[in-house]
Image 1 (tube, chains in turn purple, brown):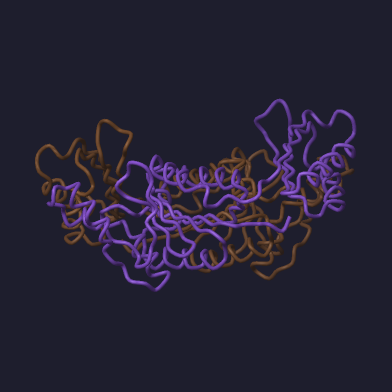
Image 2 (image 1 turned 60 degrees about the vertical axis):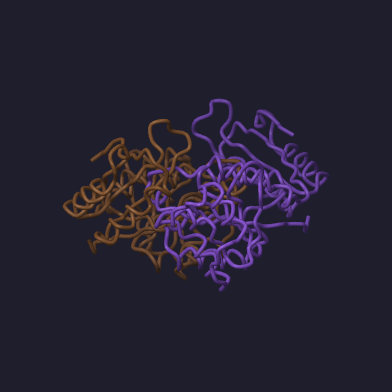
Length: 245
Length: 245
């Protein structure tokens, strides 16, 4: 159970902070990482400002095993992620020869200054190529730089996902017909017996079927099944609506 | 244009980090604050751990005018927001007499220990009562503590929203039929002429109607309209699909 690989996400985007766009990349990443056995431990949404993004990336890089950024890699004035990540690691931004060549080919040797901006990377970054795409994802140290457009973010993450696979989480769920205040004591008792259990309690106001959804998780399957049996056996008849395992 | 009231949101929730639930409270807050003329400058999603939540709340309280927390205020073991916010301000957690009385009435003088936990607040916190609700939102210093269940979060935020109203943002939008690399130079030119303009450029891969959505914003209406005219006049015929103002 000590095998906890951790991750953080830095979302770069004034458009999310100003309510114009709802971020779908962090929920996507959260689900992917969980499935890969990686614990997402922080999501930070920051504005398009180099010092702010640089500080968030640096902090997350030091505190977690993997970092993912979303957004700010296009050709316009508000695309500052490359510069910010370079600043986070105190490296210069350089033009990558391979990317420059791709862009020249694409633009029939007449690229605009702004298109050529897309060849600039933090010095030392790895280019992570996917299928049929001109622009790769980038990696420097433990930080992975992905685009903000959801179709591209998702495609690139899926292409590189096996890099991050760790031992899986085992999840069990219990739907309960009583309120949280009624069952809280049973949860405490099970946690006392299974202190390493990841136990979530989520009340719902919109479901007719149940009032609380309990999630039990561990990387140790026998442990989570032991905790499940323990908790179910503590609750009086009629409390448990459904067990999903 | 110097009237920038800023805000941050701290979302407390393992369920969001583990991909079980998609957070709808931060998009709701982002839209509400924008409408109120307040600039949301940071969103941080943190796990249900007292030291982590306390540090995030303390940092945000110092850096921004308003802070909002979402989640972690229920009666179970994973509800640690009250303790964490108290720790952020180095005050004790105390039982509020008024809340205790409400809970005693509700439970016909036989509340469970876990229900009584709901009477505990950071010492010195203001109770912000809404309509027809037993449990108030709380405020201590510039931090507002709201529940995580979306129906409750939204209702409580709407009830207290006028506390935060500032001078409005004026938004104009331009839909453009060309790629970002093609128009980036025009954006730079307009920004050189209108350096205080908040200018966003959002490419879309899924819209047939346009390729880039530009957003122009300012708290100064004449300024944003001047910038709009400037930018539209720079672009060749056929570039601008639609202007929304």
